[in-house]
View 1 (cartoon, chains in turn yellow, purple):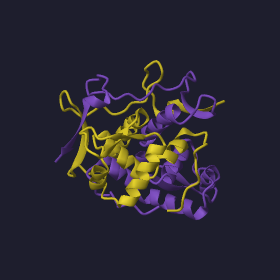
View 2: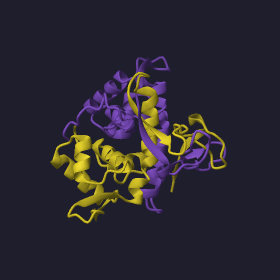
View 3: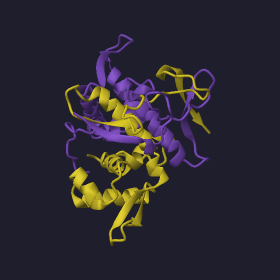
Length: 148
Length: 148
């Protein structure tokens, strides 16, 4: 793929976020971390990616403040990649991607992983767009404005 | 970038969705379409991308059922790229990316675009994770399960 223009300074937050996590691998690494993975070998096993690509991605994600490197919790010589608050806050992005794919990219007979409420095993409610006062909004109720 | 393994048949909906829209450009094209753009020249002007890259992306997005090609509404010879329901349903993904970037990728003095409620110009409420019965959930209240 041709390297995309950098959107690091874009006024649009979507463009800016894709500059950090928009390469596909990054979102899958963060997905694995949100599911509890912490070690290089765990990410590699899950993603089946070449070591050099994974190492470069993880370095970038540490530099961006998505992960921090910590000594392994078991006292071994391993280092662990631990999500920062900035990284953990990507969870709603993952939920939105999942819910879209559940509906549009799977047929009913396919095996699919789902997010459920630990308390009762029921699937989550679909994400809803709400106004500040709680009213449910549709896409056409929403405008984009530029603050300056 | 090295071409990533295809996740077209992955059991994880996040992986599968990134197979369709995870290249950065695709999400920015869909962002522009959600904001009302429909013509090749509009996307090109907005994204500043090379014609051949944009054409390839749009072809892929039509093949994936995100856009459909329609005759221009003004009766001219132009064709327009119109989002399908599958494409429009990516709006919550955009909202989630925006809200994350608003918090983590902008300093308070930077110009940023925002989504507001057309009725009163107020910003949207942040996306919330809720159980089927409406209880607010935190990340740790949620488990991943595999349905088969």
